[in-house]
Picture 1 (cartoon, rainbow, N blue to C red):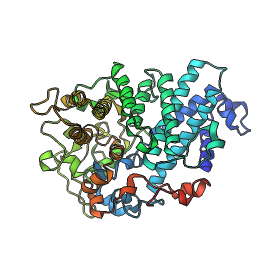
Picture 2 (cartoon, helix red, strand yellow):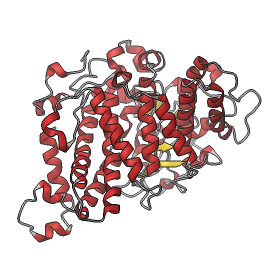
Picture 3 (cartoon, helix red, strand yellow):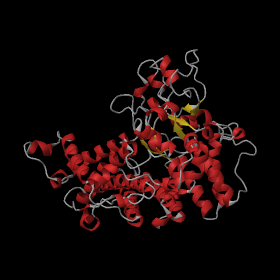
Picture 4 (cartoon, rainbow, N blue to C red):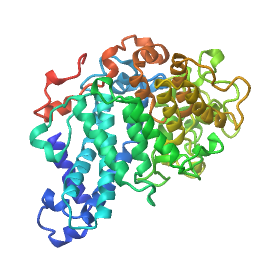
Length: 509
């Protein structure tokens, strides 16, 4: 990690080589302290780190954490052609410390964490410049470090803590979860305090994004960390609700119209467009190869990396999640592949599932007839108001307020059924356990393929049980086990970091 950090710092400084500080002494390598000595230098570095965070959501790697769940799985052709990637769904011997797909996710996060940590360290000691501007930058850096550290901790468990003021104390080894989450929570509390309620640049986080993430952390931190706290989570979500800045869109389809991004429901979404390098290529991975073979400009063509599981695309009557009349079904999943009057067939020699139901949520019709679907550029949601309502409801249920919790779920369901809940569709009179059982399905219906399912399964302790029975590949292989609740620490990290050794590997790998 130390080697990777130094390499990234060199790249970051080169990336901002048009800045004034390089012009002053172009022949001299800048020291770290020089690069972070002024807010005019820190701001572009932070913007670059936010872009790097966004870019982790692009293309194939941005979908890896969605795989291996009961919501989504790889297409057959992907399974038979890439053993490392296939291991994410099969939970076999290729889901190991040598897995390059997961190593890329680990490696991609640490340089961003490091830039944020450096910014925090130098901003905290900067008392000579505009304090209001400093506070906003400090809030942004704190938010970025907290979110990336939360992902690392939730997926890998104990991880190093990057705090420049405590390097001698903490070193570069894995830290106990209470130490990791102490930093995450402190960062989010500071971000919520310092960030503005709105930002003109929508790629920048706000106070409410920090509040929503704080709620997420409190309700989903590993219990052994000591930071699982439904009271504090509810308080954080309630602050977002009471802010009056967000509301559900009138229809579910409005959320995914590429011509109207950043809706009233958006708390934070990654900003993309149809022009490289700001395209996201998600459609490339979620679309159908059978359609792509008809026309490379077909906006719902692609390469079948990630498909919904049968549980995710079937009606309740057939063992799935969908209730009659729920508008989210056909906005989230494509069932019809007719293209300009043609009905494609699965291409010979591939997987045979190219016209099985596919993910529709990220289709970008703007590319139709003019650009390859590689140039898809819809924004990708991260934090939505509907998620806050459902999460708040879950917290209320855990606090013994199930009746009140049902009301918040029914807000989301009312929108899902077109504005009026049909008779019998409102949640009412549930026990706390019935609520727990049903909320996971409701979250899948509302938030399918938006990146929260694995964390939902991890925090509820349901990963092994539900993935083992609902994910085609995990069920077929039959090897998913409790130790898979964590990913393996990559071998590349252990080979570069003297303070993480083979004996520090997560058990089972």
